[in-house]
Figure: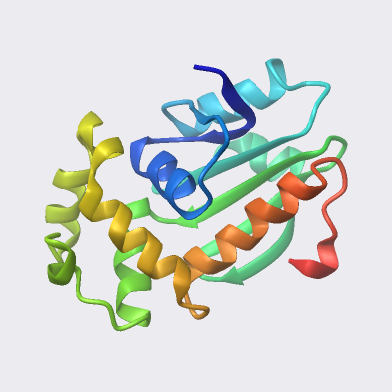
Length: 176
């Protein structure tokens, strides 16, 4: 399967979020870990645009602090950074994607039980940590519902991915 290789995701649930909220023509590149997303940007995409989606569930790698500048902090849950010298962008979801999902569902008054999903962090993590989570129809339905709510960070993340896809070498920062 050919990859839509300029979009790199850290984990299964990040990949599922990106694929669900903005269905790709080709698959996104799942990199298994924040450091692997950054390594791929540095090595595989050294001379081209790239857009990474990572969780902030562990310590932020030093490279982000050294090589990237904050473009916009949408809120405590969602931030976007740009590499100082390259057309590389990193979106950071606060804490784990599961926490990001729970907080957005609460903000949008969406009950996870309506989607046959656990409403606690550990239960949701147990559901998303399996490799089959990429095929989880209940998660997809939830992510689509969250995307539709303009108050949701899923809605904002969709806009940021669309901006990158429209002009990967020069995102209009004013539209963030």
